[in-house]
Amino acid sequence: MSKIGKESKESRRGHEPAKVALHPRNVKFDWSRLPLVWIPGEVFASHYINVLHLLLPEGERWFVKVFSEILPLIEDDQLREDVIGFIGQEGVHAAAHQEVQDYFTDNGLDVRPFAAEIEALFRKILGERDLTGRAKEEWLIERAAIIAGLEHLTAVLGNWVLNSPALDEAGADETMLDLLRWHGAEEVEHRNVAYDVFQHVDGRYLRRVRSYLLGGTALLVLWWRGAQYLMDHDPTPLESAQPGQAKRSKASLLKLIDAERRGLVPGVVRIGWATWKFFLPGYDPSKEGSTAQAVSYLAKSPAALRADAIAESR
Image (cartoon, rainbow, N blue to C red; front, top):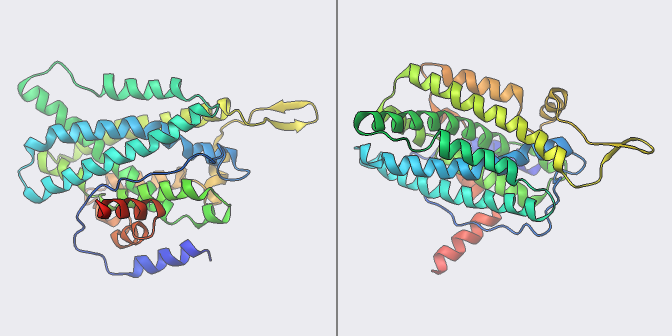
């Protein structure tokens, strides 16, 4: 068993803390030696996860904007404090993934056209509307419901990456793994917040399900399109089927199923099961992952440790 596998089991057996004070960690990463295919020999798996660097920056900036606007509607002091911590963490997440996105473009994988589509989605379709009064508040709550569903999926992904020894065994880039696991740990750490906000300001079951179907479906469609975009535009040498015949690798359901089977990506089975759990009337976000495990990783993450050291020195 890999080191992370042993530590994950030990962390899950540990005592779950009653409450964690959410705070942003101003992490920094060195991407100067990052290969575009950062899981050696795994073009599809690498780019399937790389899509997150295209989706998350604009999406999490949108999370921050919506939750900043919804703060006046929150009457519970503890929840308000949690939302402020959530906003801080999501802002840092957006900045960290934006750096990877920029690195891709600077190193021959121009992701700006696809990123522009994501920006249009969040700013034009899900952005502000010319509304006033109750209609404006309802649109704000509707977006909070969408965020609750998306945050369920990010907690699922965070829980997965904290328990993904196959990535270590495949020789995945250590800096990328630290980014994904630091982010995943914070997603698990604040996994209750968005759902609690929705329950506080509305909480209707049918709205929760409808918003998840809209937001979750859009996310999965964009994720798949993003994987194909990255594989089509990756400047690394082409795959050769036979001498003199080079071709680009294509995204396919069979590749996704195979990569998931080998533990390299979260795929159809995990996302499908996560969706079913969210639809249950008694859904409880605290059951997705372990706070103790998340805190344990954050206590040893190289990037988080550097951020904590800088914060303490100041």
